[in-house]
Amino acid sequence: MSQRSPRSGRAEERVIVVEALDIVPAPSFAIPACEPSRSCGWRWRPKTGWQDPAGLAWWEQLTGHRVDIAGWSWLDVVHPADRPAAEATWNASIRQGTTCSFDYRARRRDGAWVWINSDASPIRNDEGEVVDWIGTVSDITSAKHTERAAMLEALVVHAIAESSDLPDDLTSLMAGSAALSGAACAAFWRVDNGRFSCAAAAAAWPDECLEFFAQGMTGTSVAIDGSISGFACGADEPLWIDVLTSGASFPLRHAALAAGLRSALAIPLRRAGSGVGVLELLFDAPVQSDCILLDAGARIAAAVCGDRSTTPASHLHR
Figure 1 (cartoon, rainbow, N blue to C red):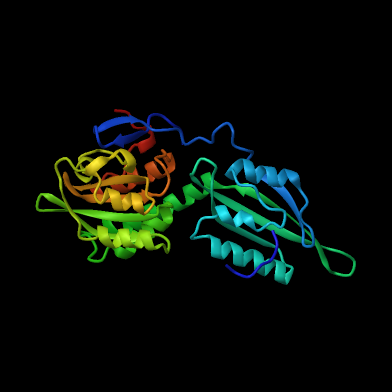
Figure 2 (spheres, rainbow, N blue to C red):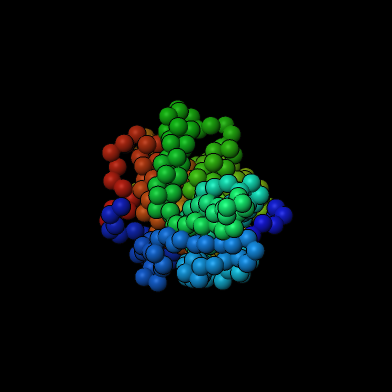
C-alpha cells in the first residue's frame, strides 16, 4: 500500500429455481478447499512497496487479483460502498504515521463478497522516520455475518413484528436491511387485493443502475399466483432465488440483470395465518446459501407471526 490522493450446524439448505418451481440443494457456504488460511501478515516499505511475497500470494489466492508492488491495486477488488473509507483510512494512517484497523468487503475469487480486517503499524528508525509498515489481513466473514445478521433481525423485528401495522414509509427500513445483509438492494412486497405490490425498495450503495432498478421496483404489481413472491409467501421458510433462471416469474428480471443482480433471498412474513408480505434481499453475486442469514430470516419470519421458538432455517428439512 502507498499513499495517493483519495479516490451453525448445517443440514439441508435450498434454492428455488423458479422456472420449474423446484427446490434444489443449495451450494455449500463453507470455505472452499482452495481458499487460503484466514489471515496473513504483511510488510510494506514507503519507498519500495511490498516486501512480503507471502502477503501478496495470500491476497491473490483469496481474490484472484495480483497486487502491484506499489500496493494500491488491492482497492480494485474492494466493495464500491467500502472503497472510499478504506482508502481514506489508509491514507490518513500513512500521512500521520499512526496505527490503523479497518473492515471492508473484498470480492473473492469465486465472485462472492468476504469481509476483511486490515491493521497496520508504523516502524520508525532512530530519527523517528517511518521506514516500514507491518500488519495483518484477516478474513472475518463469519463473525461479520453473525454480527450484521443480528442487527438486521433487530431492525426488521422492531419495525414490523413489534407493531400492529406495517410502517407507512418502508424505504429507510429497506435501505437498512440491504446495508446490514450485504445485499445490493432490498424490496418489500405487500399483499394487496390478490396481488403483490412493491411498497418500497432501496439500493445499498450509490450506483446508477441499482438506484434506477430500486426506483422502478417501487409500485410494481404482480399476480400472486405463479409469481416468485407468491410462491415465497406460501413457503414456511426463507428461500434463495436464482435471478438468472427465474424467467418471467421474477419481477423486472431484465432490469435486475442489467443492474448486476444475480440472486435474492425472499423472507415470507405471515401474521394470523395470512401473508403480510415478502422481504426480498437482492445480491450481486450468484446464489449462495448463507446459513447465518437464512437463520436470521427464519427468526424474523417467526417473530412477525408471533412464534419465537422457530427452528433455524439452515436446520429445516422438507
